[in-house]
Image (cartoon, rainbow, N blue to C red; front, side, top):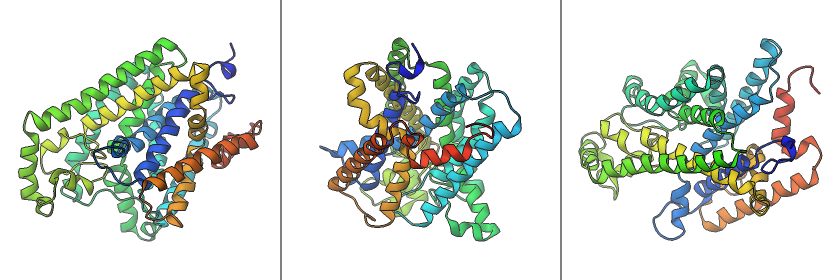
Length: 400
């Protein structure tokens, strides 16, 4: 059966289950950006479930999709054919990210970091599958550990992390230095702690052909086991082995401003997006949103793996494919949805934080992306406006 018409694939050859997971990540991102806040109880658990996992899921899927794209890449050609599209894609994403962040939409814009992820992934794409899988496994612990050890070296041992590059940073050499440090180590989504998701996604795509039912099922099981191992180990460390008590001592010594908060640990982490402080080794045993410790990274990667497997299984069924179709369409146009939502947050919806706002954003995104694909069905534009523009800009020379 031709790949384009096989169950679980869209007409463009994209894997429907993977796009559906990306669509879920978009809705999770909306929940975090415009939802009412993560509070235990009732519908608030939906925000808790999305908090911290949406960017991790986007990043894991980036690595997964890189390998899928490489399967269709023409191996012939020299430096220009191989690297020109990569450099152009990264430059466009970086410019978009800096532009959106400079509008102050009230969110931590991730696009400039994605530009770095794509550049960094290129040499790893040449590794054999066993070596890539081993490197990905090691990076889950090595990346957060590197961030923890280097934080004090650059003056970020206790605070100051979580920024994103803005246009004003490029007006001086000192600003350029800060940008480089943010992208690699101290920003909201730094390479040190988020690149393991890219490597994990690449390894999963190499190891698992989700078009096979048995493989998709194993991904769901393995992912669930990894999520339980990551989050469960953090729970045991906190509630059984006393790491929380030791963290409270470290907070009293190094973060006195957070000691009086209802949850001092969460209060410290609230200002430490993308990493943990370097004031106690016990920080590496938490799995709170955006802490990017080995345990949170393992748990988040497990969630992503399980969702890919489950959505791939659902997409094999006619009813499942129909139910997933709105998410699949949204996921295929995730870049356009991201940029538009950031522009809206920088303007009329700035500061939105309620369930009605989340419903409005989600309904608008699902409706508009569906209408776009219906309107441009059969046209290259059906990929989405920004997706199509990016494809045109990065198309190798000599191809139609």
